[in-house]
Image (cartoon, rainbow over all chains, first blue to last red; front, top):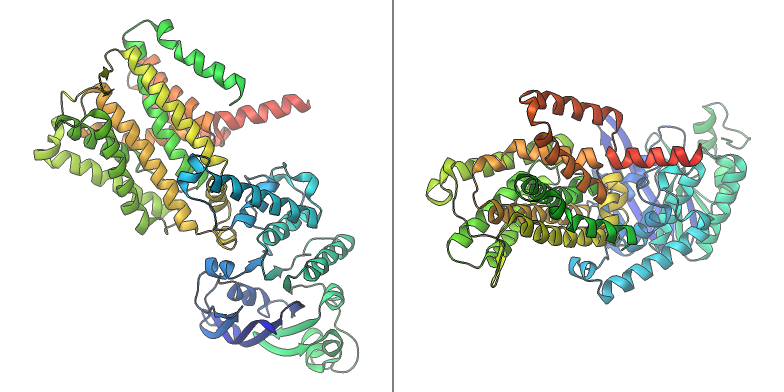
Length: 261
Length: 308
């Protein structure tokens, strides 16, 4: 069963076609990845798939709904969460409160309930706190709940982005280069977390530069080059695909050798 | 509420006994009224990060609706309540089309709003009395209790401010306060958690407008005279300066900023026009050296002392 099916996505910026008719499927319960050389359109694709950019053409079916042209808010309410390549935390809030924003989403009680401390407010706060703490524990930030988010070191800020996304119990989690700036040990630990999230029922689609990580963790890969899908399949297929090797190493390297980095 | 806060409020209640009567208490009363408006501004600008130079305009709407209602024979509290409702409506009218705008454009739009309110108050003479304003406004009161002295006004205004602080604290510690700060810090990330950031900004602006109208309405009943110039863009900038001086996003900072910038011009009256030079230089100095205001600077100092 595909949770996400995109067909013929086109997105241009001025004269450049960042996406030029991209197809993508993400099977429910899988870890899928989008890879490709720099400038191949990976981040643009993620932005289109989360509603941050509106596609010029193409369709996006997510969890049974046609999402093309809808704002990010509705993608989120349909069960999508994401992290950002350039970290976008709520730096003035504590670590716990960042996760609580993720947990509550747009489902907060009314202003009257907040001001009068009605049951609706107390129930919602308790639920958000519980989910936020669970998400922080899942990424290993449980001990830093009260720290200001802006004070965390870089790798932990990435983990907090992940926790915030997970706290909302999404069906699909988009991760934009989640291991960027991490050393290999931190990145491997992150991939363990991603695997556990998948095992817990969250479908994951990630964009990642580090080929070794991607090949280890992904069930399915889509390869982009110049805004087009040049290959799709399991890790072993992709490793042997001549088009992929050519895209990574340049023409003339069509035989043998896995793309690496 | 922490014990030191209770002590603070209790000490504040004793202030008129210290100041005696007359001018000093009047200045203190005005500081409370300004603090109300700045606390409101803190929702939309301090938390939600949306520049709002319309705060004096909302106070003007609150003052005039209260004054007109009370002059027409409504009980003061009912006129004030009507003013809050009208201001909330005005905030929706301003916010719905403009809160999609970013920084500079929103600033321009809110300046325009303040200007429009000022011009309407000035030129709709048959209703507002034009530049001579409205006089003999009935005093603040509820039922048989009517505020008669500056000291009584202090206690009433202090009680209202305490309630306003309580409400602000509850909003800050709820999902709404977190949503406002999240919207300011990273709007796209906030909307991807499912937050309707436009609605969050609207709620923040509405709270700001209601606080401003409360301030303006009580001002009308306290001074018992309103004119357009009390609610012009100069007042809007002053309220903004109070927020920045105290520390955006801090409830205590709002109170400090309002107190300092209300009392300072009176204390430095002997400087005459030079005060404006000092004020201008002071604002520049704060923006440069204490971008997070008195409260932020105090916090940093505390941390340094704690470490060193």
